[in-house]
Length: 125
Image 1 (cartoon, rainbow, N blue to C red):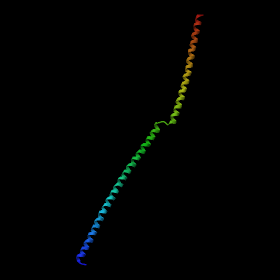
Image 2: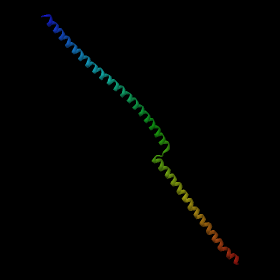
Image 3: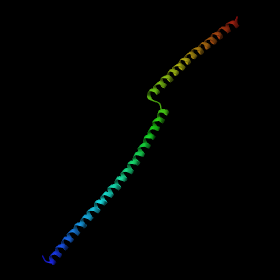
């Protein structure tokens, strides 16, 4: 082989290897960029998960305090029925007392009417 041919072959090999190296570096940079993007997205997702977890904890605490407030403030249906029954029993007792009071007032009025009828006859004698 002649020197010109060998030089041409060496130049061709160097060009091919240079092109292959350039292609390799290009692909490697693309892969590195994709890896960095994936890491950034993972970090952002982790931060979002931490924030969501904190919000969920706060919501749990708020719900627990609200449940406590409701338990302390509001009445259950069973408790309401018991209280209503007690109030109705007290109202019936008051109603019975009013009935007895009416009977007593009627007796007082009858006694006065009877006494008034007796007096004129005693005065006439």
